[in-house]
Length: 397
Image 1: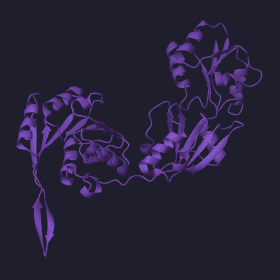
Image 2: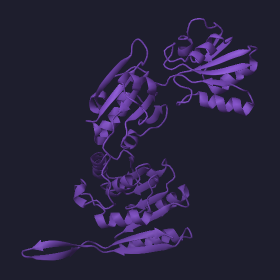
Image 3: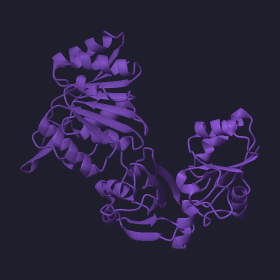
Image 4: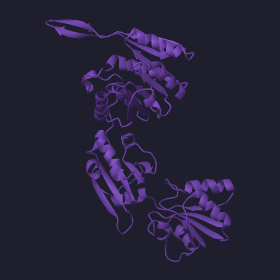
């Protein structure tokens, strides 16, 4: 059997190379998604199979008596294409094949805009998880393939919610087809529009968030009457947890969300899960999340440890409040990941003792650090130091 995988670009002859078109016109059987089969060039066989799943294609290839077969894919076979999975399956089965690439949507958009694309960042949001806030702050234009739950409007809405509504972007709709349309506007404006299913998005560089060491000023946060972990303690907590950029992090008893925000900023490629049972505090967490545009911060309203049940296993955990459930929370953390880095804060001696006991119950040592912070206050022509409550940080050893 002579088997050829053909990239058809956007469909029809516009995205086909001459070699790809010859492979299709010379095939006795053509396999592909129904949309592509309906857009085949003139002179192709009517023997067509509307299949796109790798296992179904492989099963048909083993049954057919046809000597020349072509499998059609949209776009370019090497650009987020299903051709990759079929190539792996064919290689594993020892079945030789030829790949004829097509013209990708990134090439079509660049050509339509009269721009080179060699400096663009290429991202797929087609049927897969994608965080536009993280990828669009790389300093380069970012090109998105879209599809499924993510389309240009939803991606732009997430960027606008993160504070980038004024950034310019372009939607390429039905590229290389008679209904092609280019729409350039701000991210905020594009978020309110609707686009055809065959659309791509180019976002111009978003200004990166200002980077700084942990320990934001207390007055940077919205706090109301909810207790908040102070600046110096927050900086120490992140140091004790040794936060890394891609960590999965838990903040239990999150209060205003000040520690959650600091964790999210310190782990831009990670995810932060915050648990808080108080209604007012949860409102403050949402407001602070929006203020700092940390879309990797997820809030669960409820009482721990029950509120932690569906969270992914953590790399590091901060317990800032427990409502008397500290032993059970420590049990939940170490069940989810026995190697999790763990820091517990306490201001009461009883909580300190409970934390040490909870760790020793698991055969772990406890390193206890006391932080005593005093801040100056002007009193006439003098400056007096006012002491904050001492805080204990208990870290597993």
